[in-house]
Image (cartoon, rainbow, N blue to C red; front, side):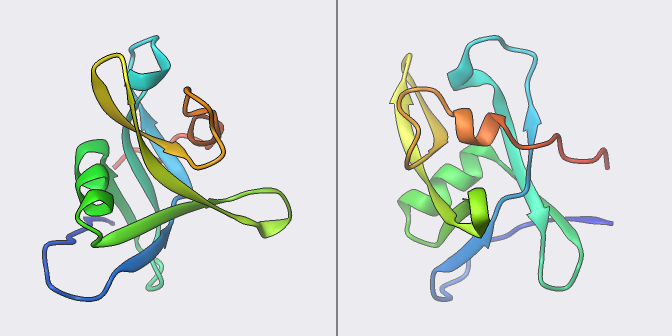
Length: 108
């Protein structure tokens, strides 16, 4: 069962591991990611739209990361490109290559 993540409460900032993405059919890298997802501590899968994840980062409600080589955490940040806000890792240049390297989230 997949649940929708909710970051609207006044709880402290969360650090959340992203393990998968939902891709769009667009070809431009800044438009390729529709949502991010992973598995919570309770074992349930979660998904969050790119827009909601950007809002959570900008409002300092949550931080997100992917696991790089050797288990190293690589944080996500908000990029601006082609007139659009988008998610990328802190080590990506312009294109969100780190996130695009993740597997597709399972269908709900």
